[in-house]
Length: 389
Ligand code: V47
Ligand code: SF4
Image 1 (cartoon, rainbow, N blue to C red):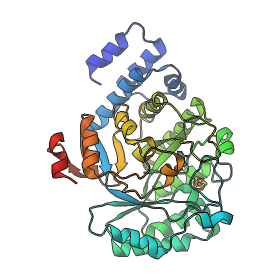
Image 2 (image 1 turned 30 degrees about the vertical axis):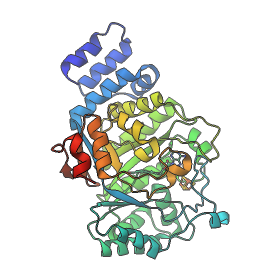
Image 3 (image 1 turned 135 degrees about the horizontal axis):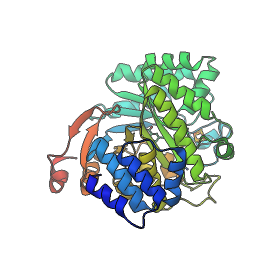
C-alpha cells in the first residue's frame, strides 16, 4: 500500500485502535502475534483486511499473478481412511464403486500431453492399501524416463506417511527413495486443521499435525519444496485457523521450504458433513486476506480455482492472492464430487490470462518452483483470445 493510503486508513477516526495498531505494524513490516491474527478475523471488515492484504501482496509481487500449465493424475479414490469431509473416497470394501489406475494407465495420461507445453504433473489420490512405495517409485521412474523435464509434484503427507510406514522405512529413507526415483516436490494436501480438537472430529484416523509437519520438514531438509493447505469453513473456529497457520509459520522460519499457502474452502456435497453450511464469500475473502497478513514468511498465496470457483478466485486477487494454480485440464475429481461449481475443471491459457487481466493484474506463467516462464503483459485483453489458445 502506498504511504498515502496507509495514512488514510490510520487516520480513519472510526478505526478500532487495535486494528490501527495492526495496520501500523504491517506498514513497518513487523510480524503479527497470534492474538493480533485472531483480532483480524474477529474485528476486521473485508475492506480493511483487503486493503492491508493487498498492500502486502503488492509490496511482495507488484501486480504479478502466477499460474502454471499442469494436469493431475489421481491414481485411485479407494482409501483406507474415513475423513468425514471427503466426498471422493470409497472404502476398500466398496472399491468396485471407485477407480484404481494401473501404472500403464497413468503413463498413458502423461503421454496424452506429449505435444503440449505443460510443465507439471500433480499426483494425488486416496490411500490404497495395495499401492505401495515400490509401485509409486516405479511410476515416478517411468514418468521421468518418458519426460525428464516434467516436474512431478506428488503425494500428500497422508499418502507418504502410510507408504513409508507400510514399507518399514523412516521418513527420511522413504523420502530420499522417492526423490531419487523422480519426485520433485510435495503438494500441500492432508493438512486440514492441525488442532486435535477439530482433527479428531473430521479426520481422526490419518496422520496427525506433528506427523504432517515432520514429513514436510524432512522434504525441506532434502532441498525439496512443498506447499501447505488448510481446510477451512466447517466446524473450526478462528482460533484453530490461527493455530494452524502458526504451526506452519514456525516450521517455515526453520526451513524456508514452503512455497505456497492454499486455503481450501470446505464444500459440503455428498459427504458426512453435508449438514455443515459452506462459508460465505465474505468469509472466504477474509480467510485469504488474513492468511496474507499473518503468514509473513510464505512467499505465495494461492487460490485453487477448481474448488473456489473461477469468479471467487478472481476476486481473491484483491485479497492477497498472487497465484491461481493451473490449467488443470479436467483431470481432478476431488472438488466436483464435493460440490464445487466447477464440474469439469479446465481453463485454457487464454481463459486464465483473461481472468487475471480483467482484475487488472499481470499474468505470468510460472514453473512449479516459481521460475518465470512467460509474462503476458504485452498482450492486450481484447487480443488474448485471438493470440492464445
Ligand atoms: O487434503 C477434500 C481437500 C485436499 C474436500 O499443493 C476438500 O498445489 C474442500 O491438497 N471440500 C487435497 N476440500 C487437494 C490438495 C491440493 C489441491 C490443489 C493444489 C495443491 C497444491 C494441493 O482436498 C485434501 C482436503 O483438504 N478436500 N475434500 C471437500 N469436501
Ligand atoms: Fe482418504 Fe484423502 Fe479422502 Fe481422507 S481426504 S478419505 S485421506 S482421500
